[in-house]
Amino acid sequence: LTEELKALRELPSETLDGEHIPLYANTGLISDLTPTRESGAEGIGLYRTEFPFMIRQRFPGEDEQRANYRQVLEAFAPRPVVLRTLDVGGDKALPYFPIEEENPFLGWRGIRITLDHPEIFLVQIRAMLLASAGLDNLNILLPMISDVSELIDSLSLIHQAYEELLEEGQDIRMPKIGVMIEVPSAVYQAGNLAKRVDFLSIGTNDLTQYLLAVDRNNSRVAELYDSLHPAVIRAILQVVDSARVHDKPVSVCGEMAGDPAAAILLLGMGIHSLSMSVSSLLRVKWVIRNLSRERALAILSEVLVMEDVREIRRYLNTQLEEAG
Ligand code: PEP
Ligand code: MG
Image 1 (cartoon, helix red, strand yellow):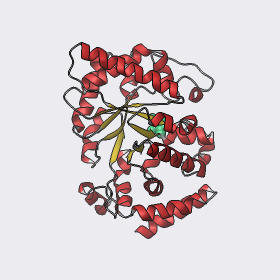
Image 2: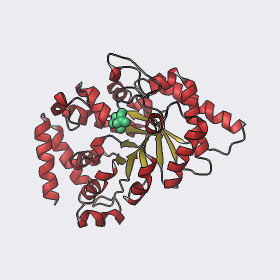
Image 3: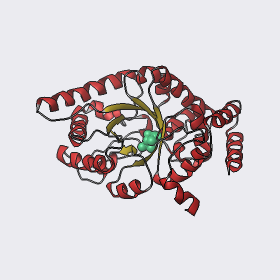
Image 4: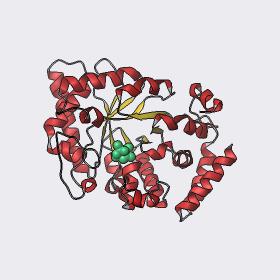
């Protein structure tokens, strides 16, 4: 890191016109907590709970999970932490829960598995709620929602777990709940989803894969995989606009949030916060501190008339160079 970037660590993530865009970290590892705190991240925008499930020989029980989530929540309290419910399937396999499918990315993954196995979901939600006792920084995020009914079912299970814990005399509060927008159908349902939850978080890794029909892990088609594709940009804009109608904040937690060129566009669209791997944080903060919302909006309008992803990237890189 250059000295200039390091100096940014202590400085606020604010645009030139004084708008605060919180920058959060993506993680799934307890060992990352200290470096993440030291990176200047204002919280955890995506904690992938699959990792603690992957390193075991069986499903971790309520106490094990609770201890894990407690460490994450405590490390950042009172700053926000977003715990995502189990998102296995697709490219993330559990050795003790084999899934054989022709098309895993279109198959049984994320919320589809946990809704078919409410006992797994309920243990995880109970562990999250219990871990949050006395802290007020838990947010729960639901992955791979492709239909409003999945959200309704998830919410009903979350309320069930919450009520049960209250009856057991636990001193817990209802956390904020969010939905990941990472499947094209969710883009077109964003308003209906947003009105039922507290926030939306766009998972651009999967959203790009599904919108462009390009496997995110296949090097043969890697050149076709680009989150700056005009279709992806339009989709994100539509999500932000739909959520605005219901006055709900939208964040981006895919890799795109850590791309300085993309950050300009997301800022222009009115994204409320960005969550990324810690290694991208200072570069994105630098972009935010060197742009006004007005300038970002002007750049976005230019990009919205472009038809080619290469043209978009070239143009954004020029803008980055001009900003310094
Ligand atoms: C995403 O899909 O953009 C995302 C953040 O989730 P994951 O990378 O864990 O699938
Ligand atoms: Mg995803």
